[in-house]
Every structure is written in structure tokens, then in C-alpha cells.
Amino acid sequence: MSRRITFILLLLFGAGLLLVWRPFIDEGEDTAQQRSQIMKPDFTARGLETRLFESEGNLAHQLKADAMAHYLQIGLTELTQPVYSVYTEDNQATWQISAEQGTFYDDQTLILERGVEIKSLQPDTAIQRVVTEYLVIDMAAETMRTDYPVTLFGPQLTIQGDGLKADLYAEKMELNRHVKTVFEPR
Image (cartoon, helix red, strand yellow):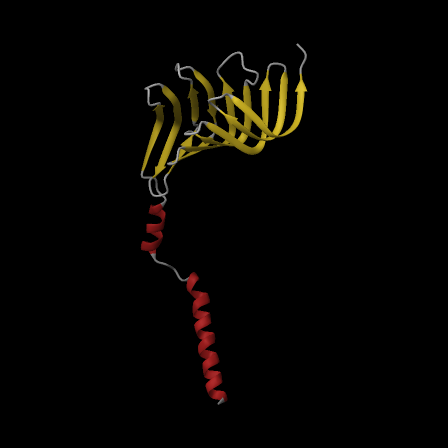
């Protein structure tokens, strides 16, 4: 009886050891090569410029980038030095948003990271520039948001806050949480 138990325990121990050791076994060159090919871009481009038009034919958005890499399988495009511009119905650019890096998804979502700068192209706006490190733009809804710290600059004022929601079409911005405002005399 004890031999059977010892044999069964050894058999179970051996099976467990084999299962633990299996992840460390070399997969072979073919499997590793297939995995690296999965994440290679389907196509790349330099000097990309994309324009999106409204149903009436007016320019609504423009997206430029120094370089891009499109991944068809996962539905995203990586952008280097992207610049996104929003236009009014009379083809006037109102906002220009730039960053070091961006990701554009098939659902018309643009995520910008590192050194994000939002500039008003209208001279008479209360907020002329906004800086943050991360921004999500819903191009279809013409909205943008972030939960990261933001700094807003206007004539004679600087506003700091945590998070931002904005409607690009209505030209409205709202801080999630106000931190500090500094007024500068003229």
C-alpha cells in the first residue's frame, strides 16, 4: 500500500514539475518570429496630413504628423509629433493641439501624450494656451478631456488645475479641480 502511495506521489510530483518547467522551455525560432511580426506596423508614412470634412464639404479637422505607423490588427495608428487642428463652419482654424506622441484609434479617438499644448488661434480668447502631459480627444463629438494637471494661460492670468473637460465646437473649457490662479497686472 505504501509503495502505491509513494508511486502516485512521485508521479504527481513529476507532473507538477513538468508543468512548472514548461514555461521556461525554448519555444523555437519560428514562434518567437511570429510574435515579433504581429506587432510590426502594416504600413508607415512620413509627413502625414489627414483632413476630415463635414457633410456640407467644410473642413472640420486636420491631423498632421511627422511620422506614423498603422497597426491594422489592433486598430490604432501611432503618431510622432502630431498636430491636430479644429475648424469652424467658415473654415477658420480655432484650436491647434500638438504633442510629442499620439495614438489615433479607429473609433475617432486621439490620445496625445508628452508636452501637449493647446493653442487658441483666435486672438481675442480669454484662454490662449493650455499645457498638460496627456489629453484624450473625441474627434466625432469634438470634445477633449484629461485628468492630468493642466496650466491655462491667458492675457494677464495663469490658472492651474487638475483635469479638464472641453467642448471644442462650443469653445468651452471646465477644470475638474481648480488649484491656483495668478493675475498679472498690466
